Length: 291
Image (cartoon, rainbow, N blue to C red; front, side, top):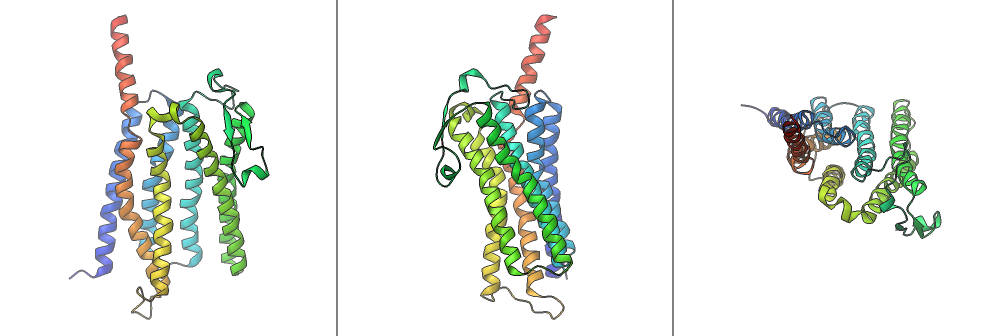
């Protein structure tokens, strides 16, 4: 008779395979309808978030007795990729509106719109600013700083963990820095969305954004719930060779493997290739008429 560990591993394997199936299917659809490379490159990076989280968690589940540094490394991979995905999401929104910061292209119809900042950002920037190339570049920098801060913090955290110098105050310092960094990145996305909500509406930006933050949201809050269950001794170890921290880590990884199946399905709606498929059909019809 199979023990709970074998059942968990088998079920998680099946979930990872399903996530890979749906994600690869969606990726191939975009590759076969490769009409707008700038947009679709960003979409491919975002789509890969679900399978990466699933595989990362599955590795942690296989080696569930790993060290703290090992699990910190696995968490860092997910969090660094999250930073890249947030930046790519803003790049996707820019491409929808034909904005190019590198080529200094800002459509005339969107120049001069008013951006209203809220507290505490008003401590550093004016409450109201007009939209121009400079403000769009600033929003981009606010997003991309997280792509730099996250891996730098991860390298420092893992290094300190390996050499055994990781007191609680250091952990709290990194937590504060990372929270400020990710908050600034998300703030820039929210500001951009509010300014261009009508123009972005046909592209389902809210559904796209929820796919990204939903993954992070579930991973974060289920971790908090598991911490509470451990503190209340509802989750506990019944074996001398296995401590409760490793059980909690295994449960977290198993839940992520299951959740990524659902997110990979939702991504097929939010990041579907239908708009590009329609473009491909229209192009083919025009070419036929020309002949």
